Image 1 (cartoon, rainbow, N blue to C red):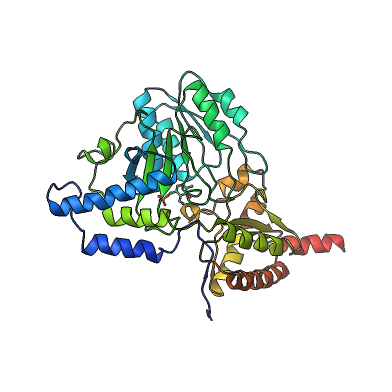
Image 2 (cartoon, helix red, strand yellow; image 1 turned 90 degrees about the vertical axis):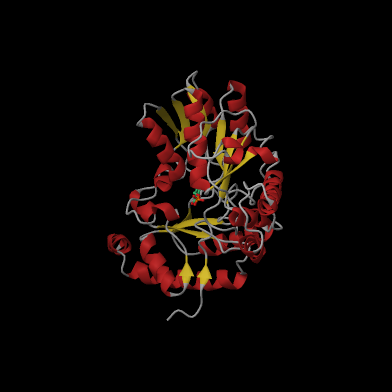
Length: 386
Ligand SMILES: Cc1ncc(COP(=O)(O)O)c(C=O)c1O
């Protein structure tokens, strides 16, 4: 019987903050004009939208006209990669092995059109070596795209260093900041970014809205054709309710320290379970991310046990949860297939409480003990020891 619900899958999506919902309600029922209309209803909607654009730009030290609203992080990644490559006329892309499918599949689509992709490996902690990026850059490199923080293991990449290298070689640098935005300070100027992808639903905003930061002067080929919206870089009537919800969520007071404290407590308690291992680094990871594996246990079985107790965690990214393949991110760290299959991701939010973490811990301990009793791996190890 489910008697409590604990949501610990905040890297998949988050609850909409009441502050965001309130702004959205206003944009749906009071200020509902089309921002492209030139009458008073349109003007009011445009004012709301431009205020939101300004607030979001400010959060990353960008200019408002450098923010292009999209339908989310996936579209922002597609627009940045396909758009910059197409506009450059060059054919080489540098990315990493642990990117989100929105990046990897965009690269694969371009590969089919004749582009060459260099996939930079990561070390056991999930870190990219900037030196390897420098070595991979050629005269034909159209873009370097390396994510800021990984969605599965939370590893934070040395973006400033990579930005410096790209700037030295005058190669556009795109980063996916979908998971890091509002959790790690982002300064597009200091980081030498040409483009950055953002999404609202990971930060307590609504689904179906995001943005691409595109530095002034960076050439991009439009991927969505139609009207002249968004500085003629992305056609389609803007999702004003989504945009104001996005802005309200992006400007909520930060809760990084509180979340990180709870995360550290959770990691400490989980690692007390025998043969439990943390995937990725303890430090240098997103404040809300825990990714652990327990010897001899299938992540899926653990997830189902927890779900029966009302607890939501995941075994990887939401986008690949339907696939039986082990996570490409965990394999890239050098984990064996069974280790990758034995991992779960627990992601916290600003609303997560200590009582919820204690409730989850109690059920994780019980489920691990139960599942190990019927684990062929654990049993064969025990019989070898006898
Ligand atoms: C790192 C990363 N990039 C891109 C996306 C896609 O964002 P959206 O769901 O807004 O399309 C996600 C979502 O899981 C993500 O974690």
